[in-house]
Image 1 (cartoon, helix red, strand yellow):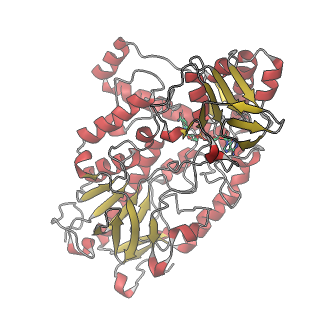
Image 2 (cartoon, rainbow, N blue to C red; image 1 turned 90 degrees about the vertical axis):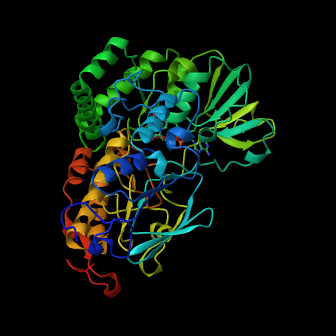
Image 3 (cartoon, rainbow, N blue to C red; image 1 turned 30 degrees about the horizontal axis):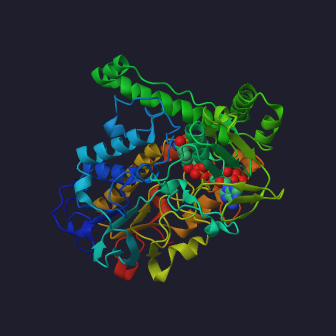
Length: 514
Ligand code: NAP
């Protein structure tokens, strides 16, 4: 057996670590966390990798979202893979197509694309200790030693439960299913929602549509986006001196984590700075006191995921824009009826109504030890141990899983750290000849209890708003401590939190019971 190297024999088997063979690893999803998983696992010596991707391209959220104005409000120098920093970013906050191209280029350059099974959704995962049986949408079945879920957080569009939605006779689509064949120029357009997505769309299209009717249920705080285009000389410098790229990555990383991360997780002084920036933005951008009052939230800034956008306020101030704050009563074939009895006639209706944030890997059916069903275990309140593992689901790991630090941070960095954590688990299995690893129920309970106790100190819970961060339990499904703590913890796994299973058939827990 190769105890401390990754020079495995090829081919998977039950108990790969004992046999000294490569583990067969399935990655579900070829978005940014799936790409990071393949590159980093391979770098660590784990080479028997298969990625299942439901669509025909890599890129995940950047492939799926193609709406006008799509950009990333996390600085690109930080929203980058550490193993493929990009000197050529065109803007400080890059636009969607450029990020998608970066995802495709990275996947090609690092040989990820060639291990992806495209148009192959995973429908069923069943633990048959110590392996997983994976069934895909074509009905094909394979067995894997390890499964890594890299399905992303917000991939299941949420459609509003409004009476008459299906009766609308004009063009209608969700923002994540943008219909590029629909003409917008000169038409009566309506948009339901005022989240990050709607703000970018409204900023990008209002000038060209006939009328822009924005149906706002809850106003949002917005901070201006300090956008800037990078000059060619700056790109040359970055290319010539890669250390500069690294320094830039670290600068944005530390600035965002230490300031914004701290503001949301209990630092009142930093939170007051965020509030001040938002209030000033609103006051400076919106001169009309009536419109300003309609746009002023009654809750604390950053309670909902903060919107970084400079285009929304100028757009909503245009003569062809209407901010409608009366509640929606129903949708009719001709448009939207509001509580004041008015029918707002529309040609196009855009649903910027967000996503089901409790889905994660669901609707894939995942069955763990003793027939435990993942969806039933979560019951609308997904939890995980350190956002990556679940008791009862050995050798199953999640990237961007429940209760991770997701708001306004670079999810690429978080995914990369989570992959490092999974690699530590695989190395432990390899070094100790283990058949399986899963979090202990007691560790999972203690971890989630500490998070629930801490949650009230975050602005997401205390800021007086409702948001997609809350799950069925009424708790924000986010990491409630300062994010750098999570990122550091990912580098130092505490194996006493895990069942280290030497022989699955006998159900032995080598290092302590569940
Ligand atoms: P969202 O933040 O969940 O916003 C959904 C909007 O739809 C809200 O304004 C919500 O109102 C409204 N809404 C939902 N159901 C409604 C109903 N039945 N009637 C009326 N209004 C309704 O969704 P999103 O804007 O798509 O953004 C989701 C997340 O995607 C963001 O928070 C962010 O994490 C990510 N994102 C990131 C970027 C980026 O630049 N990095 C850009 C876009 C999106 P209420 O507020 O009243 O619920």
